Length: 488
Image (tube, rainbow, N blue to C red):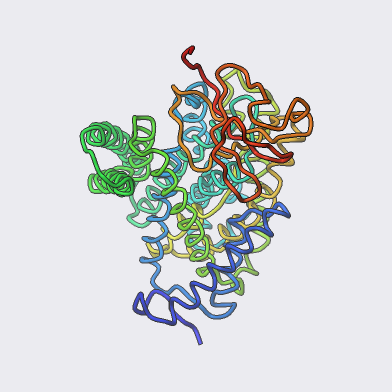
């Protein structure tokens, strides 16, 4: 019996039980996926498919609600990405990232659209048999999925040469809004039989209003956060979330690009003197993981593998062309004016055209608009997303190493949740070895250089407040602070 999870009361037992089981299984499988190099997002998506109509029978019947929940999850993911984006780190690569997320997206759309029309149009059928319909397919598939990129780059802690890490994160966060607004523009043009010129005007209006409102709300939010003194750090996170939603909602109300507005607002807030910054980012990191997990599970529930057999070959051709031709074409042409990127950096950037929840969510737009053959487009997008996650998502680290773009990273510092202001110095950690204990076994015997202090010792699962006569053991982990101190 098919269970419609969005048509029953929210607190009904038969909703909480299957969703909780899926969440537990998905989280446990992330450990296995990480060990074998499988993208976590792919695991969530496949679990949703297994639980879907062709699996155990869960289904999502209210597509409007599914699209709303997906959009809500994406806003939170983009919000977190914006808050964690350092303008200082991205300043050297902001221009190429913006060009990639705009011109690069448009080149990818056109290349993939013409390929789909001239090679696959009759096989796709419906709106996909027209040139503008194939360009719509290209628009849906054109963006680099921010959720997948943030997850893979940060969970695997890839440190890349040539400032590629900041550029790829900045690009993936800013090209989702571009792909989405082009998708909406094309859907509106097809549904209303409007001229393409009016559609382009609509696109420019969306981007301009989104940027204007996002910048304005961001600046006002910074002033507000400076003035408001809250007693609970959790309230700052909720206030920032509300301000971001305000930016999105205002832009949408005036026919602007809400995702772009929210992302700009988040970047401005994240690069200000944000109060309780560590607690706020921890909150958003946790809620972002929940949103990613739920979004991929929900989108997996939308899939009907039994209906995908007829489009498997077209989807395979579209996916391979996108990965090996359309995306590299967009990258190489977009980065032509920028001489600071090597060929290997451009090749890796081309490979990081990862697809994820974004394209699947965008593919709901033509379905909800009732365009003929839109279900076929949705199935193609779903299969291309899986192909991208399998081929590109599982090989990012390998490709980076083969192209000699990886930087050997320093070990992660164990700070026990402590936040140290930058002006006080840097936190580092050190694992005590036998060589450290040659001159004596106490902390005092280490004779640490001037400006270095041990502020915590971890021994197995025990935490020790250090003092000079503390006897150290091999394997103890010392948290030290390095900075200037006043002379005695």
